[in-house]
Image (cartoon, rainbow, N blue to C red; front, top):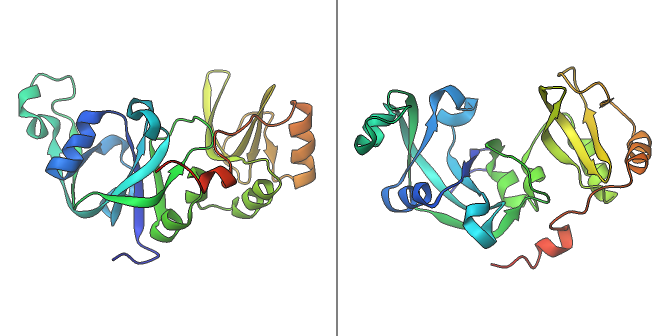
Length: 225
């Protein structure tokens, strides 16, 4: 049905009303001012559930093919909310095909804030956990650290001194976070830049070791369906 290279957009699903719209009416909205570049090119839209979905929280379980898109004002999407503060804001309305369920849900190893992930169909199908969906120059180091049991987070948001940074990799530890950047992107002053795995291991040890994950690769195989 889809090709390996087809673009997939993972979007947050944080309330049951919006999921009902996807399921029963076949569309999903994304604010134009916050839309990622692949919004109009995605062949598949997948949904990352937040805690309001109970046992399914912090997982990707459902996806739908994207049939088309259009720009619309919020008041046109929800005429009954004509006085909403964002009534005149522009949104992409993605027209969707029927909902489909992954054979295995894709869990987040730790709670983290995710709004969008731009990925591909082959990565969506091969992912054991959320971080497997990302692609960047940190791929090799990510695999190395994961194989060593450190389970880094990718594209991780860090707040430092009132400033927000998104680092390539991060390992939440008992006494802080080891932040790693593989590029010239802004990063906290303490971030490790293009480090060797040995330097990362030492930094993790200094911070008391990594925080435990919610789901390990082994647990993923028997994640409740």
